[in-house]
Every structure is written in C-alpha cells, then in structure tokens.
Length: 294
Image 1: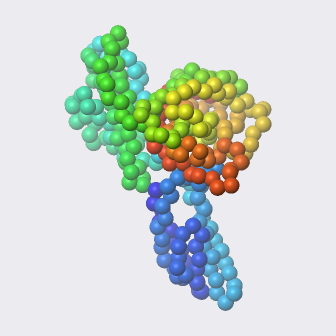
Image 2 (image 1 turned 120 degrees about the vertical axis):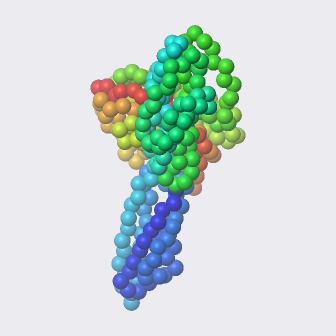
Image 3 (image 1 turned 60 degrees about the horizontal axis):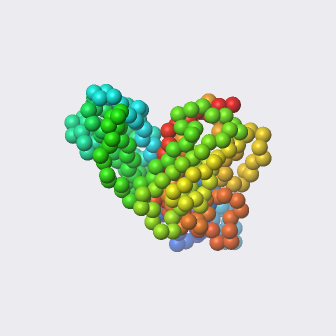
C-alpha cells in the first residue's frame, strides 16, 4: 500500500520519521506500507523542524488494514432448477466484480457491478457452478475469492485446486454462540509453500476488517479448539489475542484463516522477540458468519 505524505516547516530544515525529507522546508514523499506494523493496525509518521537550535515536532497516525474478502453462497447446495444468493463483504478494496466460468450470461449480467460489498442472485441451476469475486485493492493489487454452489445429491466434478487456496469452517458457523463457549475450527490449504503457516483471526462484519487474533503459527492443515473468551477473563491489552470485550453481543463475526510466511513471523501474540519479523500474507479463507451471544 502506498501513502502520500505532505509536510511543511515555516523556517529552517526538516527531518522525517518514517519518511525522507532531505532537509527541505516543505514537500511531499511517498512511502510503502507492506504490512501493518507489529502488534498494531496503525503506522505513525513524524516531522521535526529545526531553526537556530530550536525545534518543533508534529506527527500523524494512519490506520492500516489488510485487504480481506468474504464471499458466501446461501444456500451452498440447492435443488435442481433452484437459485442461490451470493453475498460479499470486503475491506481495503476499491472495486470488485463477480463472475462465473460456468455461466457466461451471469458473468455478462454482473460485469458492470463493481461494488466492494454486494449481493447477486444466480440463475436457476441444473448443475454445480463456480463463482469468482475478483477485486482490486486500494493499493493497486488484486485479491480473489471463490465459492461453489452444488446440486443436492449430485457430486461436483470440479478438480481445479489453485495453489495456496485456503478453506476454513467452524462449529460456530451460521449459529449464535456465547462468551465462554468453545468451537472447533478446521482449515485446509492446497499446495501451501514451504515455510508458511496459518493464523486464525476474527473478522468483524460490521467494521469490514479482521480485528483480533485467535491463534498463529499453525500448520497449513489442521484443527484448533477455541474457547471464546469470557467477559470476565483476564485480558492482555498489549497483545493482539482476542479478549471477551472485543466480541460484542449481537454482532456478526467470521473466522478467517490467513496463510503467511515466514512461519516464525510475529503477529502480536505475546511479547515481541528481539528482532521481530513481519508476516507476508499469501492467501485467505473465511467461514460463515456467526452471531455473538451473551
């Protein structure tokens, strides 16, 4: 993600923190944020102006979010000649287009719909169909999410398994679950690169972004028993691990599995090591939304 910074000193010379000014009194600079800084979702930049041994300083803080996509089909399996409803929620995107490699008319019908959050209805289906949500991020990159709508009682014949494709589900999906309850999270990754790992996050549907960490440094394929923190449980506010107060009663959340490298990258779980390594995220998978109970 690129960020444009404008700065100005009334006199003297300048020095930037997090960006270069080359001593100029005023100007602009462009910086690149590859990942959110460790244990936070903000990046801070500062300017110091110096004139005849007198200094003045100012700073600004920018919220940084990882691009994320949730694409859901409801229902995922339909009877013959029945339609399904597709819905998507994203963060960090500037445009998205839904299409299907199996339904040219559906693709044409939705070609001009570039909503970053939206819905679409499939035509009545007589065979399984795949759907692709292709998004352009605000930083100029791309992200894709896929889902398949099956026909009840008819096996799918699709065999494509894209590299790094992550799928995740939990026993909390499409339910209401309370603080202190447990849910089993299961995930799989197709062709995970060597040295990669899975992190599990809570995606807040209202905010449209991943907010807190469930677990990190997990194998590319596995399961995790998560006890949803109770409101009375101790909470480390300096950690990215979810606290009970992070999960608001009545709000919808989604469990996200994020594939990243290297496996020893620091994601904010516990005290940072002496030389923390930032993660590079490769792919994402999302479960179905659940509602937070009491």
